[in-house]
Image (cartoon, rainbow, N blue to C red; front, side, top):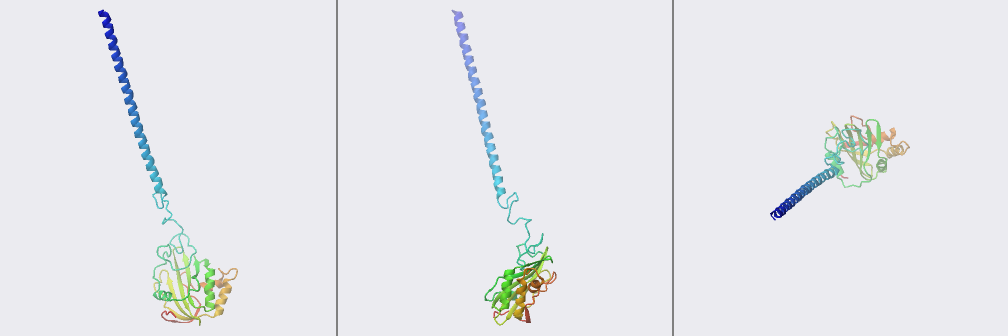
Length: 266
């Protein structure tokens, strides 16, 4: 009897130990699964944060002027404009270089003539857009034929109004030139102001009162301009560019009987 009780007790002890062992194994498995899950969450969060940071860098570099240097505004290395201080000079409007637009290079500087500005302020018709003749690197001639034709016709016909013409010599590190402003009367009288620019030209010549050249002079200029080689011929160039060169702003031969006189709006 006692032997049966002993066997029964032993079996109970074995059952307890087996049960506790299973519980321990189950706990161990649960702890392992919990650690694995936490590790996976941490890894996923880390990867997500790295992905967001990478996206942020890409979006910044796509913006103009971003860190990747893809800006198309204000970047360096672009093509220089007329009279710029680097690269090859470009054909332009032949006007006085303006601060901040890449023009002028070493040649800009002196302010616009006060007499030129006074004459420009006159209330008068503007029969034409500004015309110009531009010499590039002492070799290439550039003329705006349509506007030049309008100006020459207006002067030939003595059409009253305010006319402007530019003569500019552009080279790789600057430009030298002049803007010519004319207030024309029906009788051929003209108030004329010449604004020069370029290194060494800090003083503008005085305004003048003149007579326009004979109508036949402007007619011959128009004939030369309308010829097949009109934009570059010597005859056209002599008429539209005058006597300027690399060292001196142009003077035009469009006037006679000139005397120095302050501008008047008449």
